[in-house]
Length: 166
Image 1: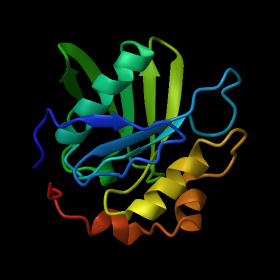
Image 2: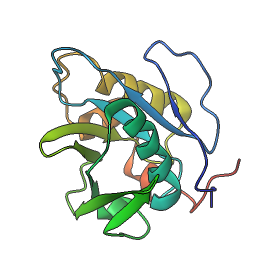
Image 3: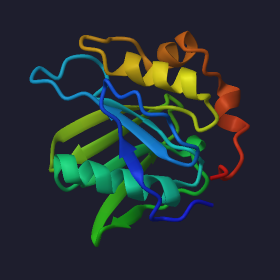
Image 4: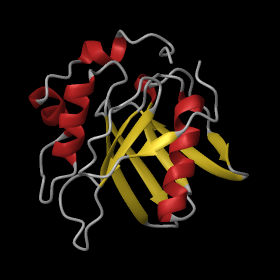
């Protein structure tokens, strides 16, 4: 299992940095219009929610302000806690069984951000391609179609080990 303090890297859209094993990756495009289906994409490296989500929420809160809730698909994670404390702040976790590879992050009462969630077992090339596709302006493609178009399969999600090396 990765330590809870494992860093989350926020990669810029033009970033050419390599994706390092064991690092959660977030790509988020913020535009004045906020058009398109997704506000960002996240590539957790394991199914261990606590080791992955804490760092992500810390990085998001630094950019967006306090996070109130996160909506996740229960089938994508090992364990399903009702909340998580991040930097002394409680974040409620809402669970569903939709299986749509998305995450909803709520800031305040009504400000929602929708993220594509890349399965942990995805390869670096397909994961980067899916992240880039998700954040394109006016993108109206579903998560399922993005993952299929980039060659990411259900096996990438279900066959991943409980933790990644590194």
